[in-house]
Image (cartoon, rainbow over all chains, first blue to last red; front, side, top):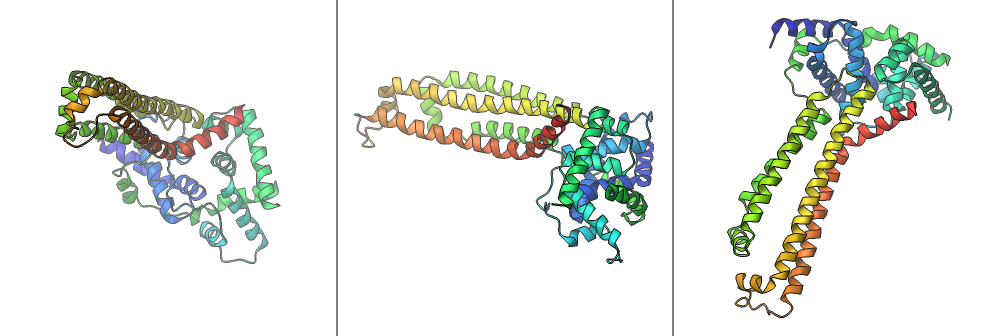
Length: 164
Length: 212
């Protein structure tokens, strides 16, 4: 195995690991599953790395591989639970100031996003990451117009979860 | 939706709260094995091939004797060879599919490629169930038409089995066993591949809905 390639890969992943952690947080509900998914994404990134030509940014390329792994290849372990309780929400967003109304709203919003299906979750995630609709459509393989329509529907779903 | 926009700002401000893995722990992950769905489909198909081959070695002597004396020994051997050749072609196709799946594709394309793998799996399952069922039916018909010979070879007379009604009892018990075996195989495939592909199917339908 090419040591230089390995070094370059690990270095870049180390610098950009936040992207992978954020995806793991959205797609898993506990620390063990988080670690499992992180590892699977790392393996898939490494496997695809020789084909990474550098015509896009490493981080842009990472979004695609990491999301694809979370949505398509990763088998959720039995530990996965679908319902969210406040304990697991506070695991996701650590905060000392529980009285803060905005903080509470954010927590509810976060747990609502976790209730969405895998595809809607990916859309919302890319939106939160401030990606353009063009990038979103290129990652998921849908048209830009449909990405917009779908994003609005995902927001609508969120609204319904928050205000049943 | 201002709540989502608020979260967007917070989302970007909260990066410092994320875990930080060291260079070494990331490096160690490269040495770990993948557990992706496609890989499992490939591994299970190989285990299955080995299982069917292994089964050939554990057929009791009596059965082999019966097969040979009934005059179908050669046919069984040849059909087994053909069966394993077809089996190997499937394994090759699984491997090719496994290789062609690229995580760098768009999510939709990736799913389409995996579903191609699913199609291969489906044909593989149909083939196995079909082969087993037709093999059992043909053998039963053959044995039924030569029940007299079968009665003699199995030496049922000395075991006190009356000759009258033997053929009917034999064929009915064979049919029951046949249905049970094929049923078990269907449950096995349904469990293994059904579970492996459940999530993928669900997400693919979701993504397809967007473009419809």
